[in-house]
Amino acid sequence: MSEPLSRGAQLEGFLANVPIVKTLGMRCDIKGDDMTTVLPFQDKLIGNFTIKALHGGAIGTFLEMTAMAQLFLVSDVERPARTINITVDYLRQGKAEDLYGRARVIKLGRRMASVTAEAWQSERDKPVAALHGHFLLNRTGTPQT
Amino acid sequence: MDESISSLDKRIDLMRQHMDGMTQVVPWARETGFKVTRVERGQVWGVQPFAEHLVGDVEAQVIHGGAITTLLDNLSGMACAASLEEFRFVATLDLRIDYMRPADSGRDIIGEAECYHVTKSVAFTRAWAYHESRDKVIATAQGAFAINKPRPKASLGVPE
Image (cartoon, rainbow over all chains, first blue to last red; front, side, top):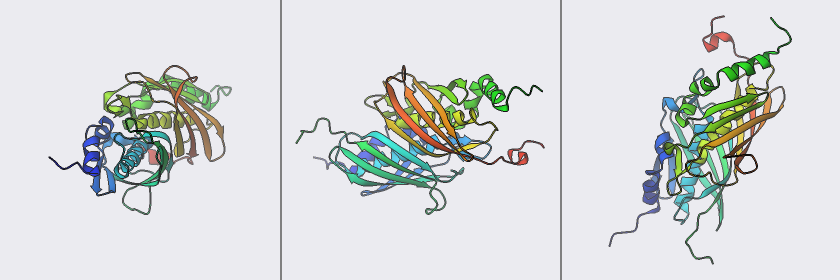
């Protein structure tokens, strides 16, 4: 019998089949329960051509996916969580460069989780955007205790 | 020149004449494929057609929340442009989105945004996403936008 897939391998397998992840061109680098996501720069991610800035919607989508991926990585749910709400702070202009993201699960409850995420470019200490969100864990199919 | 028509009214007219162009010049909006459908003073409507490349939940075939973020962020910024007396670029300070119910698979999502208050440096917005009407929303959004100082024309590549 084959070994059960690690959480990271499950996540990678799952993300490979999500169309929006492919549309963004987002990748993730997973080491155990530690993950950094990468959004390689592409022209289509631009929101303002005059100043060559990334679109806030693209940054927001990337951060929301980063938060959901980290939550999947550290929880035991079979399906990805559902977003209850997110707040995205836009701290600096996203330049025409690669964007990196990391998320931290602040609280993992039975039904809900609170997650923060940050995105940065050339300097880790100068975040481009920060997200805080609440997510509903999808536990359908598991016995209610 | 007719002084009775404010520069804002002229800009709103211009926005109405160029509703397609408003998203055509935004690469990420072109990628998600949303369109502006109506412009009023301080209010902008748009539609995000269902598109397979935006799906975030493969089993349910539902568009990812990020497409709603894109739609409502952009429409909210445009609602600011449709309410500022003088033309200024705006930049999103923050945007909060609450998801009330999942979108239906295969259906267009309508977005509506309004700029309800403007100070010297900040514009405040509300927005809604729904299939039919605001009575049954998919998501609501609340945003704050920084109003940038006017840029010298030269920096925009516009001849003086």
